[in-house]
Amino acid sequence: MWVIAFFLLNMNTIQQAAAIVISKVIGGRNLNQVLSETLKTYPHFSVQERGALMDLSYGTLRFYGQISGLLDLLLNKPVHDVHIRYLLLIALYQLQHSKAAPYAVVDFAVNAVRNHTPAASGLANAILRNFLRKRDTLLKTVEKSEEGLYSYPQWWITEVKLQYGTKKASSILKSGNQHPPMTLRVNEKKTTATDYLYLLAQNNIAAQIIAPNSIMLKQPQSVDQLPGFLDGVVSVQDAGAQYAKQFLDVENGMRVLDACAAPGGKSAHLLEAYQLELFALDKDAGRLERIRENMSRLRLSANLIIGDASKPADWWDGRLFQRILADVPCSATGVVRRHPDIKWLRRLSDLESFAKIQEEILNALWPLLETTGKLLYVTCSIFDRENQKVIDNFLSQHPNAKQLDLNAAGMEKGQFIPNDLNDGFFYALLYKKL
Image (cartoon, rainbow, N blue to C red; front, side, top):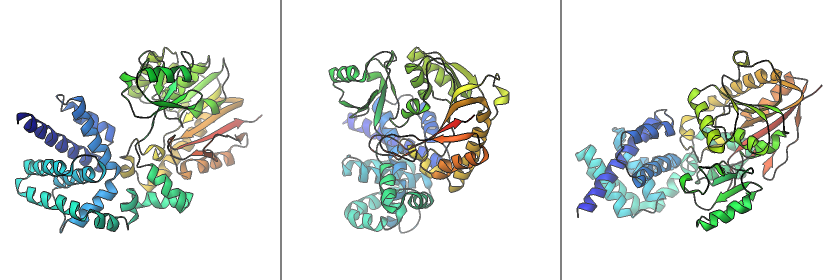
């Protein structure tokens, strides 16, 4: 009996913590930062409890549009206590999208509400049981609105439909609500994808090769369960991000700049394949330390620089680069399934704000590239305002710049859209003419 009580107490604690996380994110905070801070306040949480907190937080935000609509249909009047509202949203996420037993979800949620406000426990019980009774009808009603159907803010849905058309937009939006694949980049200095696939099989980890040095796991794994990870045999990197090495077209001995480099995955990929004089730049010291840690694990060497890519006068030594990788700040709308908080943190106006930053960086980096050199522009955005429109504007102002063709399966006009294999990325390769 005490085991059940102990689990109930912990589940209530997890739900309370998740409600606080969601409240802060909807209030404008970054999910990863809030989760990190919250977990520090619960040092006693087990691995399973930490995982449960992450699932409730990510899942509720992933389907926030749908479950908010459902809750509004179930309420006779608004719940003014936002903590109770978030506890109910978490429970609705569990009832609709998790495999947890409905009776257990309702009991835990009612207890969580009771612990916060005893008088509201009856309301919680009535709302959740009413949802279970009328689930099908409620879902049909909430899905009449696009926000309820897709779980994105309306501006986002409208922009995707305008750019891609209704049919493709529906696929893109639904893909963003799926759990992302876990893809590995095999370090070609240490092994091959075929050999590593065999090693995974020996460790009972199902996977498949999806590109020459890229392996997708059937189920996500903790990195400490991946054979050879600590020795730099593999790294976790989305398949779409791995195209940077191919598109940049580097050769041994080149002087290369990776601007906005953190956490260093693209730099590391280049160094695993070529002997380069590589400079990894980032304006945040903490993010630069992540690059240092990744390079250390992979036994690679790069020149790390703290600096703003848009202000090279503060850090550039005056020597030109033969290749520049400009993985610029963006809305990150192509990686929303990994970061569902982005849906509720971004605003339409942010697209123009990012575009201005991107143009500043491109204009600042272009003089650092030698004639006949190449610059690869990269975003993890699906919106053209940050992608080809930025490139078109840049080309109109720089007659010595030419955009080169890029070809890859699943890419259209430089754009990868989120699918079963990769996140959303945009690539544009610029050549500096004589």
